[in-house]
Image 1 (cartoon, rainbow, N blue to C red):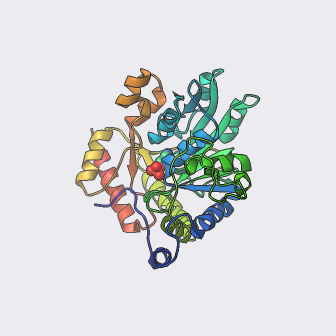
Image 2 (image 1 turned 90 degrees about the vertical axis):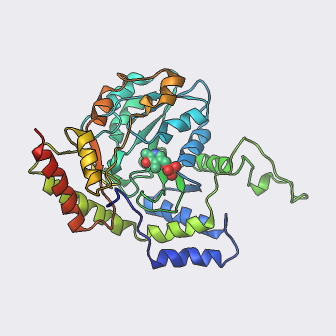
Image 3 (image 1 turned 180 degrees about the vertical axis):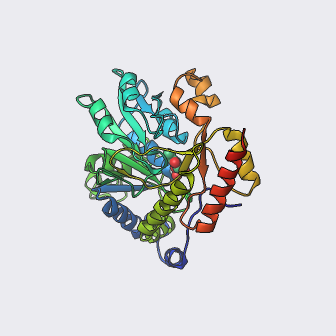
Length: 374
Ligand SMILES: *Cc1c(COP(=O)(O)O)cnc(C)c1O
């Protein structure tokens, strides 16, 4: 089976992890600070806070922003559930705004319609590795006390108008799950240029216990204070060392992902029933996913799976999950563009080690089946 996504691990990665295992610190040692600095530098961000996974990064972002019960946070429905779940973790309400039917990124016009006096933040998802239309989103929230958060779990290394994800908006979240651009096994990070926000993220990462030595009683070195209700969301040094080693290869991974996308684009140019997604103006795509719209998606999906091609569907609209139907009374009709897209989308294999021969196999299997449909 050709998977839809897969990590690339080489000898350097293995040696980087081995060095940690032979050293003094398995967690919260120098590898964490080094990985944070590496990612911050790569993205030109002032601050980076490593955490246990992307979901924890989203949760910590909500905590650091002070989102609380009664607040609303606008999110898109075509995303991994964690984008909305993080809002529920802090007792606030996710409000779903529809997506643009061509790019499947959150639609700034619908965001505008969903803003109320309770709206505190908008989480835009850089879906598939194509960024949101951030300038339009900035214009939509201009003059209002609303923070923009980027869920860039799909888009490490993408750029928007020449700026790398990580600094396009106030707060950016990445995931280092094995299917993402670089992996730490499990891992996540929050990037921001604001030192106060970063220090609040660090606080919530470690139980809400202050690590600021100035606040500790000088005479009693054992003294510490828990000032907020935080979590243990720390990343280990084992993971961080893997991350720094992976980051060195990111530009190569991105180049190969873009090459694969170009080959798919060319192969599908002839087949008018296979429609690749549109791109946001000014975005250099990072291609976490290669998504196409097809007719008879369920049949196409089964045929490809039976042919040994590990396709996937990203995503079931989050507001249609039983939890959101039950808890928030949501359901079909809320986001028509996302719901219509959901019936048509399929994610094709996309990862750096995918071979040219496999790309041809995927494209031939897909177009062959579609051309035979009535
Ligand atoms: C992967 C992902 C997450 C969550 O990341 P984890 O590291 O798996 O917790 C959140 N949002 C999006 C859009 C993702 O793709």
